[in-house]
Every structure is written in structure tokens, then in C-alpha cells.
Image 1 (cartoon, helix red, strand yellow):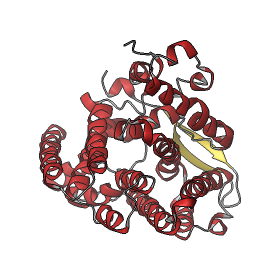
Image 2 (cartoon, one colour):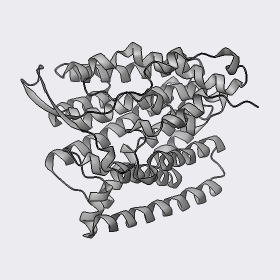
Image 3 (cartoon, helix red, strand yellow):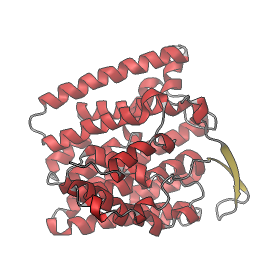
Length: 366
């Protein structure tokens, strides 16, 4: 499937809110969820008894993540919604499929779906002025900052707050609430800061250098936040581990570059059909004064080098828990899968449908 065939139409909507009257907003008309209520109604007790791990996978979607999405009423309150709650669960399941990380997967899956809303809020909906208030609210965790913003943006912010409340309820008995919340909130704030930088670049028509783009891409890849959350909800939640991940070690930096660069290779053509920040491809072309095909070669070579960094760091990081290292390597692996062959399986979710069905719905008889 070519990138051109995967093009997504751009719509213009007119809104009236307390910040602006008849404001025209350009937003991407993402394909709807292909799952509907599959994971709410799917139940085959006989087949589920075949494999307890499969049962755990399906129950996560059926009772927790998908139900949370429906309760939040995003579909009726957020006009630029991208319903990818099932697809979002692919990332935490890729990080670790072991049954004892079920709760962690649920939380990261919810955050992943919510991050799609946050990303699209910065990418396709909010004005720079609105996004500055939205970012300030995230940095201060204070809803009063966004009282004047459109309802949909307030809904997204409140959903984030609710997820942090849920995290706190999960760890309240551990005695680590302050340590964990401090770092998870900071990681989310850092990610939002990266989105804000891109929003300003887009508004100003600024094309950063390839090197400048990659530095900010560490944050917008979302991986530092995902790994922080994985650590926070596991047995690894110590100050030393949080310090390690916040210093962005080589293995994490390389994994984030793999994510950011493979994503951009797959999505930059249809993203540039609307007003959108320059991707790694455009930044590389601009910095080195090269063609698009030459930029592809540069970026693919860098991805290959990043894999060498990931492998070397994995073998030499003896003082880091293996489950944490595995989660980072697996995030790099899922990026390669999601965006291989210039296809964005997350946005064009039809490309992912058979894989999801095979993994979560079709039991393997042993």
C-alpha cells in the first residue's frame, strides 16, 4: 500500500467558543475505529479456557481499557477524536506480555489512547494561544489555566488528571506515591513541552535543523513517558531508576530515534497535505540540501546505527533490571513493525486489523 493510497482528507470545521468566534479549524478526518464494541462483547469462555494468558489479554480490553474509553465519552465531546484504544494497547503489550504486568499494560494503554488525543490537540486542533494555556495547565496541573478553552480541550485535560488519580490509587499502599507521581507527571509535562515546541515551529513556518528536530523528537516519541510509567508501576520504582530514565540513557535515546524516524518516514507525506510541522524528512532535506530519496537513505542509515546502539547498550547495562531493558528494546521493535514499508498501521488501522485479531481474539490451541 503506497503512502498516496493512505492519504487522509483534511476537513475544515467552524466552532464558537469562549476564546474565539467562528474560528475555522483545520483537522484531519482520521478513519474511525474498526473495532467498535468488539472487545466489550467478545466472549468465548470455552476458547478462553484453552490459554490463561490469552484470557488475560482479552479481559484487559473487555473490562478495563475499552470500557474506560466509552465512559469518557470522547466520541461525543472531542470533534477531532482518533479512536485508537485497541491499537494503543499494542505498545504496552509489546513492552511486556507477561501476566503480572497486566495492570501496567492497562494504564499505559489508557495513557496511549489519551496521548493520541493530546497529540491531535496540539497537531490539528488548538491555536498556539490555546495550546500555551493547555501546556501551562499540564506543567502546573491546574485546571484553572484552561477555563477559557473549548470544552473538548478541557475534556482531554480532565481525562489526563483522572488517569493520574488512578495511578495514585494503584500505588497508594506502596508508600511511593509522591516519588512516582512526581516523576510520571514530569515525564508527561516534558512530552507536552515537546508538542508545544512543534506547534510553535508549525505556526511560524520554521523548519528546524535535522539535529534540532531529533532533540525535540526524544520527547514527542512518547517513549520516555511510557518507560517512566512502566518503571513507576512495577517493582523498579526507585529514585535511582527514575534518575536513569530521565537522563535518557543511550538505549532509550536510540529507541526514541527509531520510533520518531520510522514514524516520520511512514507518515510525513500525508501529514504535509495539511499545515503540519516539518518532519525528520523535511528537516534532513533542508539541513543537508538533499533530495527526498537521499534523505530517506540518511534516515534509514541512522535507524540502522540506532539499532547497533540499542544492542550494545542492552548487553552492557548490567545494573539495570532486565525487564526495563526489555521494555525499551521491545518499544523499538514495535516501532519498526508499526511503520515498516512506509506504512502507518496506527493511523491506517485496517493494516493492523489481522494482527490484532490474531494476537487477541483467535486462540492458539496447544
